[in-house]
Length: 415
Image 1 (cartoon, rainbow, N blue to C red):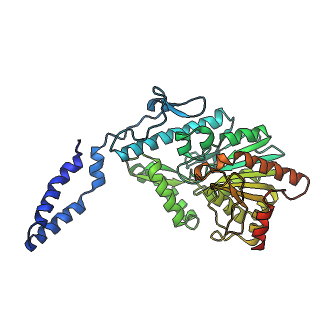
Image 2: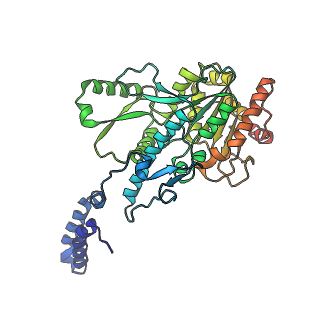
Image 3: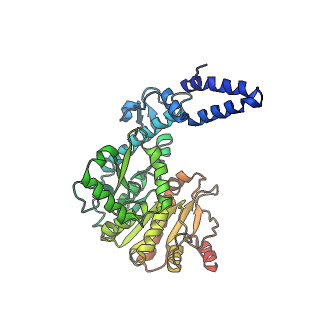
């Protein structure tokens, strides 16, 4: 049985405490002193000393993994799926290894969007200077010029980036279920232009020591803080920091975050892309697919651009959306529009498209055919395209969408 360095260090203290506790009242002072000593020991730091270096490969080949013809991640030599517990009793190290692989997956999906889906990577802000922080989105060649249809894809919160629904699915299942690529390819086959949002890419990181040595960057930081003071809620920042802690596994130096102008949160990003791209597109009919927090970002977009969204958007497919029309203070006219033009495929053990009751007076809710949150987009894939086709045909004939969820909608109207 192996004994860790931290255990060897703490063992004498534990033995001393046990011996003291067997003594009389006179030993209380010693017990208190030892407890105080233990409280000052940083166990996390001790555990780190037991770990191998956090030095991981920066390519799939380096990890000895590759995607097979079915889009499944498999070990090059054994053909086995990804193994999380690569080293026993080193959970933190295994987690860091998993996160390092996840960053490679993100870059791999970006490459697929450009090479396999023929999308263009567009830098934002559109008027960014050479030195300021930038993000990007992906668009099809005809995204702004297609006169008929445009599809907009928004993923949820967390470590996922443009083109992904769930990193866990990409690593443990396959590319089809975990990425937006099936949606993109089918949309393009059916004549849609496509825009893929990147709502979690809100800032860049720089080393704090270098940052503080650059006066111009300090000025920029102060300006950004002033501009964003009332825009980013404490809850949003807390959630973002929580995910970022796990997203960058090899960061050991003290870093600072430089927010991207007008794209410092998923909500800001959605509004920015609407104003500078979607609203400028030639498409007569715009369709949204928004997963989880992406649904909340869409509702926020509608609150801020209600008239424009109503005039341009034909239908919205939400997948296990976490929006809340009460907390977000969506008005009555927005709720009415959502009841007629949106549908939320939620995690449920019921068969696909089965009506699911809701206490909120917004859009109809139907089963995604799975009780796994991260799978809701993939499992509802065929139903979403059918929903869009019906909505498109209904708009073309100047009729309201002939949905099979009419009775569910009536129940909401009664509320």
